[in-house]
Image 1 (tube, rainbow, N blue to C red):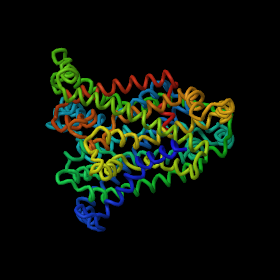
Image 2: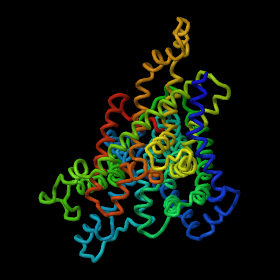
Image 3: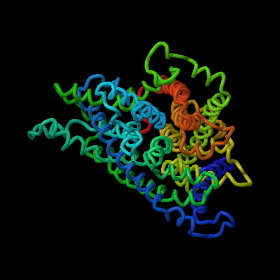
Image 4: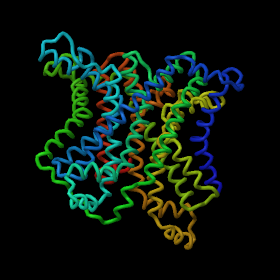
Length: 552
């Protein structure tokens, strides 16, 4: 029993304490800790701070709309039609999913930077114009960049729902004289509307909580969003209490929308009319099948092919602006990072050490809590589920401010250490670990453990000899699903990193500010190659689409 209560104390330390400290700090003075509302006055008493909040809302709405336009048609085409090359499109969507938004933003800077971007160069060469027509440093550019990395959320939710819908309702519509397109818009899509809305909400929340892409694109365009404004509060002198107050609306918006999502998805209209075993037949699109494939390729071109192509070109180039030529090819950028630049070497080591430790801590804690909850070993065990899932509704940037407020000051004084990064990452991705662990626990009959205990074994022996072997595949998949996002996490790392604990995501951001795009692209390529290798291992162990399916 002592073990279980110790684990609960650790859970409270990781989740509840930073959040409570964040809220309390927003009402305290920095000097004496007395109650005050001045933090909120300072946070929202300036027009530019309010404009940043409005810009975030504009960004979130724009991304949600564009992600819906990208994700829903592709999900429908893959699940319900005879569109060709579905496997290729799935792989490219997965590529968009694992590409960090800030890396995609860097790719689009190389593509659509004013005059120097490749698309603008092509336009000038073809038309003879004096300047290009694309400017990625704008709200429209920011919305596009975030949307092309967020639409996989809409795709996953919609595709998973469509796979549950049988063709019976569509057949009834056809019998009553409805055509293919009318059936799609009047029957098929309304059945999965709750899932579509869920994906749109996730895309909206992802957009307003991002730091990397807005910092790369919004700041040069001379406008702020909430995340970049919060970052400014951490410039000297650090105003953590004001930052905490400024983060409150973001937290409230997130909680409100997740509550709306749970209400909407809880209804799951598509499940109430189908039932298991319903037949699902693909729709014959005729000549439109190639048009649909072309649209899917266009979206994947924007999200993966174009930005990754220019990143690879820059990574292997002496100077990325010179273009594609044998004389411009070099491996010097990679050699510099791997052998010459000690800071880069340390950042690479830190990234994978911290991410590995994060995955082990998150999985270990999540599995233990899932066991306590499923076996009801302590009173009010369902409250533990709430605590494990709570970080899901806390944006990474808000969580980082909470960790800073709780654990940066003495007596712990963890700011700038690897410990605070690992703890923050583990808390950030605990919901992923808990979801997988809880699902695995529900699949195992408690009678198998009871047999061990009847034969004289302890509960811990039953866990080690029975549960662990049975759950190893599920836990391996969960470990990968925590490890990959931890390697690319920027929103929380940028607030907590120290001189000796820089990770790849923070170093990429620093390199972008220096304009060193060749080395930056090489470092991003290293991160992507390792991420793809880890994902490939997941495919081999768990099966196809394990990442996309487990995030639904």
